[in-house]
Length: 346
Image (cartoon, rainbow, N blue to C red):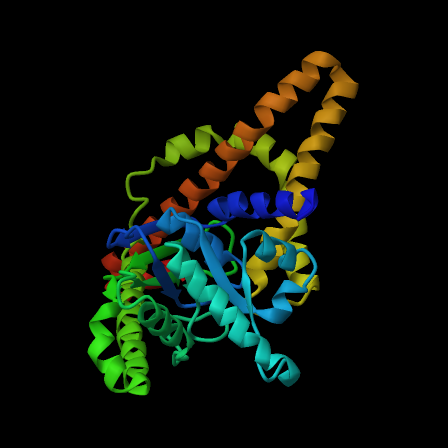
């Protein structure tokens, strides 16, 4: 891979940590071979956030056309993504799936983590769509080929989003209980089809439970800003105004890209993220150059070292203001007896 795709991939991984206010809860992530299964609401953000949550690099299985997409495909290849060929994309390429599934099994046999989105596509929403059986087929065939000594586990992770396409909205990852694949040995040896169906059902149960838990936790987070001081927010306005003046333009450009690009709901955050990893570094470089030409070396040094923390401070201030506003609205609803303080975060 050339330097540009590597740079874009590294930038996307770091930008994903900023895009959402991500939290995790649930089980610990096991070592060794893991088949990570998750719901799929956000095209590129989901695999990036899952690697952040698990603390492990995962090899994702993705639809083959995505790997040919400019920029987006570069980032996926940087993650080591393996292609899956679908009939609706090109029926002539279906035979290649045998090789792709073999590579996926190799990832597990090497003790690494394989990421599969078993819904078979991405679509925002709290409800889990019916799972395809491919993830179970890969898991059971890999374990069987290793003589049931692989010690492979399936790890369901439910991703819940407060606003999938909204910058700095909350995201919560609920890590479910690991599922040991060798528990289906007897069923697989009697009937592979039955074992595949049963393991897929167990994955469905794990993901549904994680999504219900995640949704409830997000709805209960509306009062998180109850202790934030309005006076402190007001006192910080001058510095925030400076930060907004510097960083407001690239933020607006990311928003415009998501409007004029006309992405689907599941790709809004991806378009914003990929735009951000280009325009924010460019804004930083332009600001440093302007400061250097205007004020000389002191201006260059000052801009180079103060702009990043100014960005972080401004970002934090808007987060605190959002929490403060949500908490006030939740309290008003409680006092008025209006149902559903959860509406405050929608």
